[in-house]
Image (cartoon, rainbow, N blue to C red; front, side, top):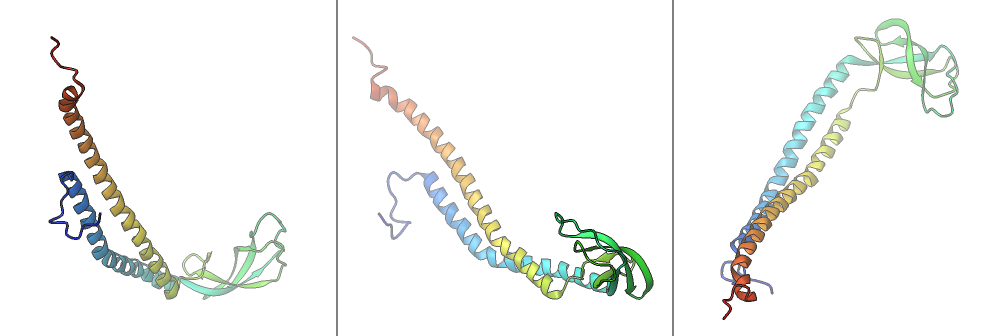
Length: 190
């Protein structure tokens, strides 16, 4: 039976714990609906700010260079990439020799574009872009929706579990009082 007005349509069988559970569910739902947009926006802003810091640091400490393979890369069919020796030129440094990860079977003399750490000279990945930072922040912010929803649901389940334990204890106490009268177990025998 659908109830149109919760305040006036109480069932005589409805317990206080039933009303507590119902109101707790409503309150959690309202808090979730009101808090979710703010949580998503603040998470996005926080992660984006941290990612943009990384973008600026990487842009300042990485520069493009050219690497030329000094020897043929080994042909290892089970691996997707292998390390081999390369000569790096550019990167605002004198040419130097280091190792780089290349495709198996790459021929000596092959040139490729790389990114170099300006402090150590190590070959590193390309710097993070602002677009990548924005997408990453959006993805993490999107994960807040299921995380908060599951947290609210877990809180409601925990409350329901606690209320059910209370209900079972009350039911056991009531049954202890009623069962002897109902079963006739304690009747005085003539």
